[in-house]
Length: 103
Image (cartoon, rainbow, N blue to C red; front, side, top):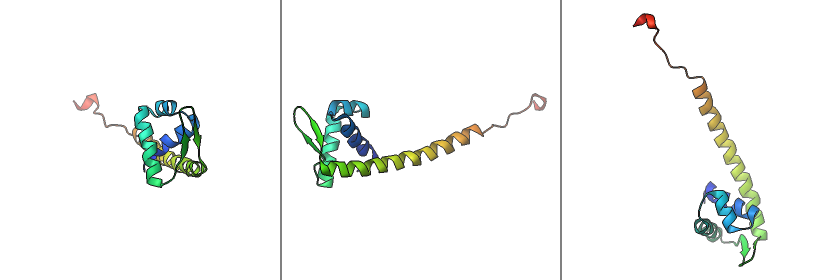
């Protein structure tokens, strides 16, 4: 299970459509569907009821979705700290330059 797959889960729960969710995640629809199915197999629960016309989040899916949002939110915060540190590192970096007098 990866953070990326949790993003797929959240996108599907919000879009309730595999094609739109895949588009939101910038992957193909088959890739998105496969990853969601593998997550269900890994967890041993059905997260979505699906048929040709609609997708519905199951009760187990709602529980997993709530936790997935917490995990993804925490991961985003962690990455935000990293981005801030990297930005600060470059903002404060000033390469030494030689003055024209020393040439």
